[in-house]
Image (cartoon, rainbow, N blue to C red; front, side, top):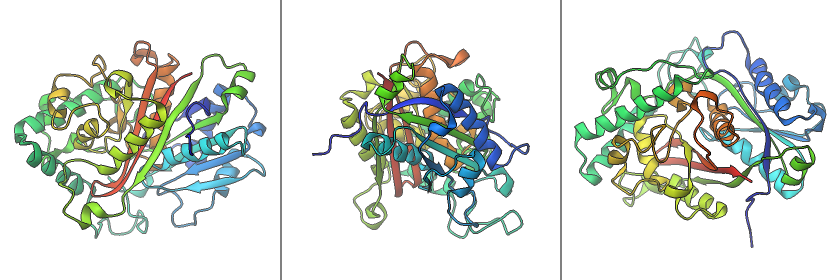
Length: 398
């Protein structure tokens, strides 16, 4: 019977670029920047890496899906490299591939790396893969803000939440993240808008205003993983290990039946349930010290608090307004600023989230360091609420 990978894989090095409008660097340079930080952190030679999982959601979509470009960029000669794309969970999927390879005994040391340059496309949001900078800038299949606005409508209808209460909670989600991101030198956006500015911003898709929507960005992040035994042999004292890492993908029932009422994301709940079971977490409210979740829109973070079992169903609005997920709250969320402040270079986002948890667990987060965290959770949501995926990773000290 499958027993999972709990504590079978340790992260020995991580790297993350500054996210933003990186006109100064191409995809290869961004990858190298993150990789060099991780390599120094791990204290190994690049020749010791035995396999690569490389993630890019949009980058290179028109020139094939080979992983050869990452091997060339990093000069990792002759080792297997796999290109990964799994929508917004691409970075987490790379970590899953590298972790499973180590846990299985197939390799001793593996690299997971995600990189994306989306500012070059000219789009304010995620571009469709068949469009380029000089093509017409419209999408014939609807928009992400519209899809997630439906999640807000479904949530309001189920729990009888007033429009004003929901708007204030959504504004607090954004306000909190911007307060956190201002302390992070690697964040794209480091401004600190007031609640009034957020509440009175232009509406993008009711009830989502400008500050409720994340933008796109350029960036890269990576992790080097091995077994705890090898990590100790390399001189590592305190280890961050993967406690649970699970993925759940929709089969279309949410949009094909009347079973789903639009107030939650089923695949996040399934991934969380499986990851918690693997990690031995029975009460996330008391056991999880910090979270990095997929706040592509403020309503997504709000609903995710319930999907991850942190807030009871229908209680996330109250918990958010009470400050439970603020930096000084019981379960700090987006302590690095989240997608709101980093933007969303698809291939890199999941690994960027793990990077923050890693720093926090090891006490390296500088001005935004929390007090003695031991368990952190990352979450990605891919696609749209009614037909997508959920990915949850639990990291902890070993």
